[in-house]
Amino acid sequence: MKISKKITLALCSAGLLASAAATAVVALPNEAFEVIYFSNPSKTNVVGGLEYYCGSRFYSWGERTSYRTRISYGPC
Image 1 (tube, rainbow, N blue to C red):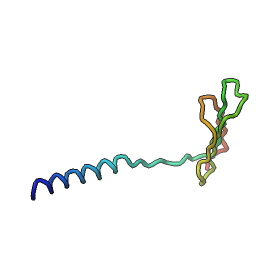
Image 2: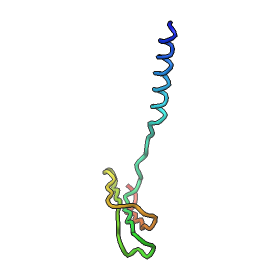
Image 3: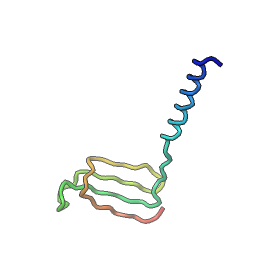
């Protein structure tokens, strides 16, 4: 094998390994829930939200902050 073919083969192998390592499997939550995000600690102004209901997609809107309330609707 010529050197250029060996280098090409090595680079392709490294690329496949890197892409396989970067692929992550994310498990869906096992409960339905909602998160409400607020602009301040007193939680008087809603600025965003996130919802997940069993078997559906996540739905989010607005902004996420550290001031939040999480509501659980039970297991799926």
